[in-house]
Amino acid sequence: MEEQDFILCECELEPLRDFVASLEGNFEVVIAKAPSTCMTMIQAEDSVEFQDFYLGEALTTECELVVNGQRGYGICLGDEPVRGYCIAFIDALTQLPGADLKDIEAFLTQQYQLIKQAEQLEYNQIMRTRVDFKLMEQE
Amino acid sequence: MGYVAVKGGTEAIHNASELAEFYRVKGDTTPIDIKQIRAQMRLAIDKVMGEGGIYAPEYAAIALKQAEGDVYEAAFILRAFRTTLQRNYYSQVINTREMFVKRKISASFREIPGGQILGPTRDYTQRTLDTAKATETVIDIKTFLDGFDAKIDPEKLEGISTFGKVIDLLQQEGLLAPVDPTEDRSLVDITREAIKFPAPRSARLQMMARAETGGLMALGYSSQRGFGAVHPTVGELRYGTVPVRVKDAGGRNRYIGKIEVTENEMITGSKPAKKGTPPYFTIGYGLCFGHNETKVICMSTLDTAMRRPEMGAPANDQEFVLYHTEGVEAMGFTNHLKLPHYVTFQSSLSNTRAAVERNNKTNKEVEQQMIQMQSV
Image (cartoon, rainbow over all chains, first blue to last red; front, side, top):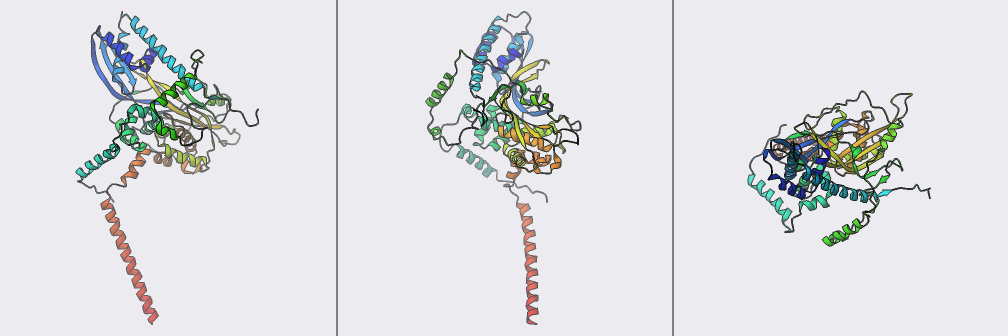
């Protein structure tokens, strides 16, 4: 679940939209709650004494669909109605008893690789700034 | 003395608002794209989100554009916007130990877990005006990006990892002050209940997380200079992204995205609480939306300062710190002074006139008495 949500929240919007559009026609989709924005309060804690506190709110999009009778929820940060809809659709689909998930798994795998590749490149650019300061008296 | 409202002026107010819009666009230049603001005004966006108390980079960019770059005004707009939406979720506690680190430094230790990572910083470069920015083109940007990417060999990529924290080392060594069992550890939400003093630490941290950077810096700096005597060292400062998770309506844990945060743990030496106990280190904590290092350094300094009210300096006074660093309220009050106060001022005008008249009369009487005495 965590990995699926991670991929669907972090992947590019266009391939996700196209992928869901290619599947939608095969199912009966009822919009239980159209994509709309709301707030999520972010909880944090201090890293030493673990004192909980509220950091602030984050703009969130939520959507609820019923696909062939199976309910799915889509939640993501930002004002992202299309992504929210797509997440809810795939959430419902992956819970449908007996559903063929091959295409979904292939899409998720492909997108996961793209996300991780981009992350790794960024990480390696960041690691170029790793420093080992020497004290003045050191050679 | 109560306030007396004014009425009328609708047309002039409408025209003034239209005129402000005219001044925003009168140069007849290309409209700034929201994507451009998000990408190229990264730190301004982060300030607006941090002070507006809402993580929404796209909306922060819109607010900044609408406010002609005024960060206070943009934060105000976001705060107002926040109240128009329902809060449907509370996230699980974010874990900064699983941060995708973009910057991580310590001023206390040279060698830290994973090493010092400078990340995107201008700390070590001179602040010289780069006039080439005035003529920067799309081609310049592309050339830079291509050259930047070429510095990485895609065949030799290091795997992504998370890093242990500096303060964990101090903790393991038993050098940190134990948690004060008498401190109020309740979790309150200052957006839902009015703050009361003394405020629990959760309220103080929440208020500082959305406080105005300049206000925090003024008071944090006062403490660092000796007014209240907090002599801090940056234990570890981190900037990066952390995952956000909530429970959906079906009760399942869901990943909903990641947010950028800056975090700082400030180490301060402390006097022993009582004779015979060691002088443990205390940690002040700072965390805010986006990339804002000044804010978290001062937040963590003030976190420590406010736990020492006996020091008696402004930075040690919760009410002083929290009320005066609340940017939207401070800006609102300051700017309300421009609004009509005619009746209030008329009243003070008549009082002053009467007092001056009385004073003149008394002076004249004394003068006449002196003349009379001199003539005798």
